[in-house]
Structures are given as structure tokens and as C-alpha cells.
Length: 411
Image 1 (cartoon, one colour):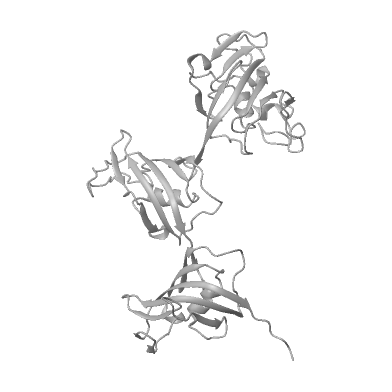
Image 2 (image 1 turned 90 degrees about the horizontal axis):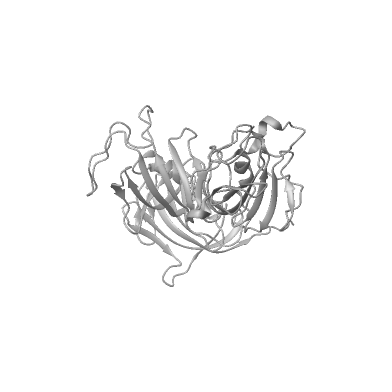
């Protein structure tokens, strides 16, 4: 059921800077939370909100989000609309189906859009809207001109909708929120699962069950995928709508060229809109340790706490080091062997290992990629298990077993 939008005045038309300090639809920050049964005006808008049942958590939807609500008397996305005298003029509860719509697009009365942005998930409220935020001087079927109306609204859920590039090219709907606030960067290695379909539902690409791993900077499949991934958190699940952007020199999808059939999947016709189900399963942060792209640290396992070894620490590590062709040339603290102990910034080990160890936490495991400048340089290095040729790139898997800050006593 679609509820006719209001014809009244927008919040910005009736409120000056002196009238309302918060954004439209928000409650004044200094006001205490509403108690069940309590009613309050939202700013000086004339919109009244009466709390019927408390919600959960603290988040509230924003304009552009897709909300699903139901309402009893008066109206709101599963709601019943009434006049102040109790006469019903619309209802979504009659058919038992809640209503889903995008906030801020005029699908419902303007005051309802603004009111819902103050609600928490599961919250139920009674909104009373003045004519300017209801149906105005024109009214609608069942609502006389210049009428106050009420909406009994329960906010069931909402989906956050993000226009990633601010041009409508990639629309992201967050179906399941991720963990923590960390997002991958261009250097990081990500593990994703996805399914790509055409508008008619034809699946044109899909990861294996275990997902697919790649470095963000290397890209994968088409540009929109990586543009979306860097906005996501671990465990986040989204749905993307990707436009072909045929006029762009760097289209988000496959533009006017399309894509030939491959790997058992059908071809993608030119100018296709793509629907993508995408999950960021996990990612491994990659750090440019030296700032010149000569020593990279990929974190395989997060360490404990917030402290890192830093310079001048006595560290104990286990590690395996090998050449690019897989030849292992050194192994310490593995399979019962003695771990490696050294003091950072004392030139006791190769510079790449030294610099990386200073950034590690206790218990952290990392994979280092070290250029010759921070390895053994242009010399031949005879190590425990093999000879390292001149100008060799090195790879080391390191675990920080322990570190102790070294205190220097002046004599």
C-alpha cells in the first residue's frame, strides 16, 4: 500500500536558525529521552511525538535509508491513518503487510519522514502532524484540507542505503552490519563472497563456497566491487546496484563493451545493470612499514593490547624466512628450535625485520615482504639453511613471542 505524500511545507520553510538548532527530524540533544506515555514537540515544527513502547539500541535511520514500519491508528508503514476525531482514512494493518519505503523521497507525509528519523528499532510512537507536515491545504482522499492527522508507528527495521560515489553509479544496501569500525585499505588483502546477476536474475559471476581472496589495489572482476569493499566492515553483507556508466572513461561495471562468457557463466550484455550480493568475510591489514613500499607487513593474527615493541626493545620472535622461489634459508623458534632474540634499532638483524618487529604487538603474527635494500642488499649472504643471492627479495613469517623495553641507566 502506498501512502500519498503530503502537500505541506518542508521543515526548512517554517524554521529559522533561531527556531530549531538541530537537523530536521532530530530531537534537541539536550532534551532527556522520552518516557513511555510522554509526548514532546520535535523542535518548533509542530510535530508531536508520543512514546508508546521503547525501542532497542541507539541507532536511528537517516534520510535515504529504507525503513519497514507498521502502524495502528493513524499511519506509517504498516499503519492506520486517522483524523483527530478517530475516523480512519488509510491502513496497512488491514492487509497485514508492513510498508517499506525510502526516507526523504516523499512516499509519505513530510512530517512522518522527519519523525521516523528519531525512532529506534522496535520503537512504537504516536505522531501528531500539523497540516503543514501532513496533507496541507489540499488534503487527500478521506482527509479534509488543513487537517491534523496522526500516525501510530512501529519501526520494525531499516536498511542503510549508501550512494558510494555520490552519482548513483553504485548503490549499497547494508543487509547485515559488520564488526568493529575497521575497513580495508588499498594495500589490504580481502576475502569476499559474491554473486553477480543481471536485472532478469541471470547469474553471471559467483565465488566458490570458500570465497575469493585478493589485494584491493589489484582489483577484481570490475571497479565497483573494490569501491564497495573499502566502505565495508568485517562480516558486512550488502546488496549493490551497479549502473553501467557508459559515458565514464572508468565505468563501474562493464560499460558498453559487456563481458564474454567465461568460467561456465553466461556473457554480460553491453550496458547491463548488475545486482551484486557481496560479503566481506575478512581482511588482513597490510602496512607499508618503511613508507617507501620496500617493506610490507601483512597481519595474519592480531596481537594483544595496544603496545608495540618500538625502538630499543629486547624482542623474542619465531620466524621462517625464504626466497621468492620458496627456498627456506633460515628458521628460528620453529619445531622446538631456539627463537631469535635481538634488540630493535641496534642493527642486530636485517633492517626490514628490525623495522617490522618494532611495529608488532605481543602474540602478533605477520608476513613480511622485504626488498633487497632492507634485506641483504647486493652481497651474498650465507645463512643456516641456504645461501641468499645478491639483490634478493625476502619473505618472512614472524610471530612476536615477547618483548621487553630496555632501560638505559646513565653513569
